[in-house]
Length: 449
Image 1 (spheres, helix red, strand yellow):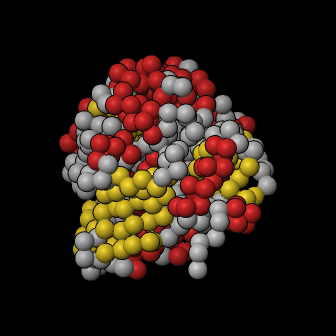
Image 2 (cartoon, helix red, strand yellow):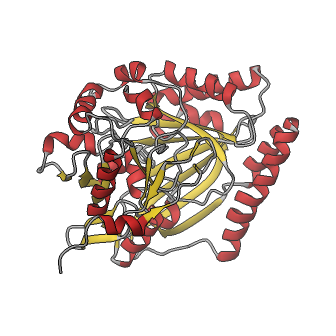
Image 3 (cartoon, helix red, strand yellow):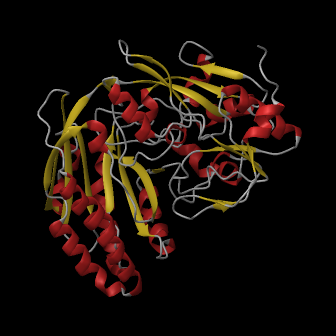
């Protein structure tokens, strides 16, 4: 039977526009229309219709970016129906996923086949295309960001093609397409290199902050995946070290009751209450932070990797994250500590520190250097402006590069010196999207219009 014409899927999959907001409520828009394609051909057809109407196009995932990178004032492509595994080779570990697949769903499906992502971040609710397009990463000095696990992608382009891109097909586009900010086209599917299922043994406990800072370049390589949290107004670092073990290693998963107490009650429920109190009575925050540092992060867990890497976040916050050289962590955090106390700010949310390997992805925040990542947060009911402005100035002074999906004020003119291949990326953008079908205000700012 002949394929149905493009107008039929449009009638079934077009949705009335309604206000859209990202998870943290920093961005909102009401698109001209919303389309919900379920195949690559439907994505191409939706782009063609948008161009005919003179409208820009943006795909959305889970809305977990804090920036406006997914804001779609024209045609919003909801990729919810473009999900699942489309091809899997358990022998090589190569798995093709539709672009709208959520990371947590992908991990569960991979686990059924004895496979896993090599590394993940600490949140897994994003769509895989959104996570890749913004440079999502985890921690581990031997492991790169999610883009380093990519082996090929299919892009729906502005001129109506489904374009395969890999190291062997359209290879000149590959270093840009691996982390494209949604500026090159709409990702339709992605092939990732997975690994056999493995267990992570997690050791979580507090340590003196100064000892962790002074030893960070060494400490960050002493386990497979190392990170720590620091609550301002305290002198403790809440450290987490994950060691990779074979799939048949003994597991010690968190019990249902303890998980509810640790994650739902203390980690989200009680913490929400404390943050709300702190937003009304900031003077209570130092005592709350000392309490949190004393009772949290004191457990040992061993479970399948995807159950350990990520944790659920129910308390809304705003976040700025920068990558910096490995040895910059101690001076940055000490300067942040000084500025926080000097200004008598009361900061309830912790600062998170991680580290990754260098990579060769053009717009990766780890391009060409091993990197530490410093993330500052503010409860969503509190004004983040002054704190984030001061933090960004300190991070920039240490050759920092902002995470593309986290809050920052950088623009193309001052991002260019931070990325040696910035202009090469812009040349690929000019080639694939000369008419700027896939732009929005955020991309105009960070890439230029």
